[in-house]
Amino acid sequence: MTTEESTVPSNFIRKMVEEDNQTGKFGGQVHTRFPPEPNGYLHVGHAKAICLDFGIAAEYGGLCNLRFDDTNPVKEEEEFVESIQEDVRWLGFDWEDRLFYASDYFDQLYQWAVQLIKNGKAYVDSLSADEIREYRGTLTEPGKESPYRNRSIQENLDLFERMRAGEFENGTHVLRAKIDMTSGNLNMRDPVMYRILHAAHHRTGDKWCIYPMYDYAHGQSDSIEGITHSFCTIEYEDHRPLYDWFLDELGVYHPRQIEFAPLNLSYTVLSKRKLLRLVSEKHVNGWDDPRMPTLSGLRRRGYTPESIRDFCERIGVAKNESVVDIALLEHTLREDLNKRAQRVMAVLRPLKVVIDNYPEDQVEEFEVINNPEDPDMGSRKVPFSRVVYIEREDFLEDPPKKFFRLAPGREVRLKSAYYITCVDVVKDEQTGQILEVHCTYDPESRGGGTPDKRKVRGTLHWVSAAHALDAEVRLYDYLFSKPDPENVEEGSDFTANLNPDSLESLTFCKVEPDLAKAAPGSRYQFLRQGYFAVDPDSSDEKLVFNRAVSLRDTWAKIQKTQKK
Ligand code: ATP
Ligand code: MG
Image (cartoon, helix red, strand yellow):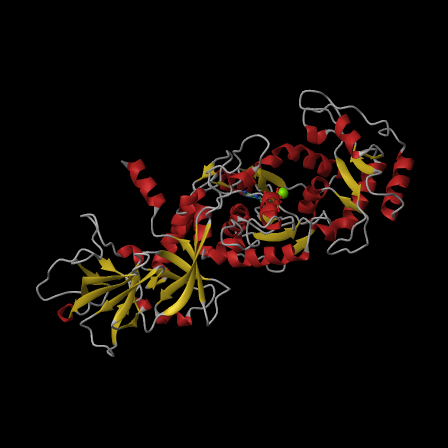
């Protein structure tokens, strides 16, 4: 084993794959797939599945397909097909020429359905949807057989053909597998295989008016593609006997299905149906709203693919469900950007500081290092002049003793520039609001130190007023105000837990001129404020930044207290 391999933490799936490789079950081959339904945008839970599907294949020298399980024309759209491909690519994975669609297999699936009818293993049922549900029974009661269950093979073939030909309305007939209405597993109680849907499909157009159910299409699609290991989330464990049944009855190649626990994340919902509601009810501004747990939302927020892959590696893959602390996701981004993001100065809530003894027209440039973690990132020049902005919260007129920032009579360091001492405060006579603060500077402290080495506790970030660029900065809090958004009073739903303060938009921010070159998508550390990404809304007139994460690392804190 190479050292690189041995650093990969093991999980039960790797063990199972290795077992199969040893016994030669699949001839030592590993061929996986990521099978999204194109009915929404991908979220960070899907990232876990993608990293697993593509990651395991890569680790064992195998292949991974991207397959759209597009069996429901009513909920599926081309927009989703495109966004999903973009997101998988962005995460850093490549399906090469193996892009497939379940709809590519509709002909084969239809022929197989006919074969099952001919073998007496499927029948056309004419109960209504409600009746089928009623006849199905419950977990404690067996189901009842449909009066149509014993139609002749000939009649079934004829009806199924006419279903396909478009002779019947939606909901009048379905094709069902003939298994066992008394099975302890509800999925085995004659599940529906085909329903009539007079709807155009995003790829097959009007060719079909009957569509296979997901449970009928999924296992056979895996089989057609020669998938060796079919990973899926734990709720499909109860569907596995059904997938096995179809493959066995058809006598076709049989992949191995392995279930794992889905990702749950605190303060987050990860269900496409719920995310779709957030979008359609306009609780957020679209699928890529930076508060969304979608990959497009996280990308816009400032997340890097590396940080998300790192997160997926750290949470591991297990069989038992748990909730991952969202602080871990934030922590992985901080770790990544700490190494890579240029550090700059930006003032989010500006307060004007006039340096009385600094020459009116003088401008100096200070050489500032871009990232102390990475000398290769070089340095830049930051202009300084008589009027600068500092953060409003960095000044208090009447500060407590432990306040080490600016206050009347107190001295602070302006990062990489000079020491300044507050000598006066100008206020609005009517409102009492502080309009500007006057200071003097010590010319001896150029660059941030003095010959007498006197101690100054506070170091403030700043921008020169004459050189600053205007910016809008969007600060985010969690989209939900409870760690478990699903936890609600009876009669209400997860939207009751939406956090009304999840977005705070600051529209009068001042940032240093070096950010004029900041392209949408690029990421920065704003000193003392966190990590930020340039939003696609950004323009030359007004820069727009999203805060990805603050600098406060709650995850590191949690780890520390746990070690104690
Ligand atoms: P929905 O949320 O609408 O029920 P879904 O999330 O299951 O749908 P799919 O498109 O079927 O969406 O998912 C594609 C793959 O991603 C499946 O293999 C599924 O098991 C996996 N997946 C979905 N959600 C998660 C999650 N939270 N954690 C890990 N894997 C997930
Ligand atoms: Mg699904």
